[in-house]
Length: 206
Image (tube, rainbow, N blue to C red):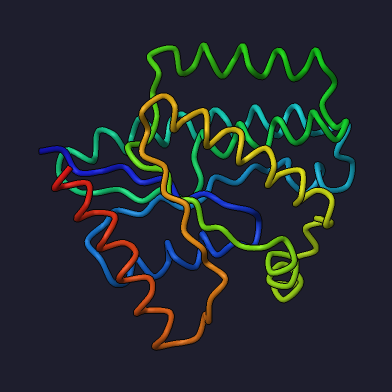
């Protein structure tokens, strides 16, 4: 039986990367780090100018990552730090906030459909659900100057809900897990181990 491809999704600051780093050290899962675009710095400086190019760059990387993960899952489960599913939520957010014009958003969707014409999706979408205020506090602690404000996260959260509902209706397993928890050890390890063990066990016993 093929092992699951699990996409970890959520707001910026939800704890995706922390969970993926924990999984790399403590499980047999293959872990794929979040795609990064060399255009992100320019995007944060001028979102309207760089939003489309940045979204397309990330989309292409995430499509390639998903296909690689599906091949690798013949032997081992794979954990993706964000995927094509989250990419759609971000693109829709950029459009609603005016960083993508209507023509750019239409073209993004055309490219998305072309790249994923065989309806490729992860087996499981694991959404780490945190309040916007918690996400903002965690972003602030990182000190990476990501130029993310409260309204951006609210818009992103709303679009994530719509995208997750869409994937759920298509038969993709969507798991929403409250993740506003203590990130210190050993509490964190207990939660992370229980979460991933449960997700994998439920998948294998389908």
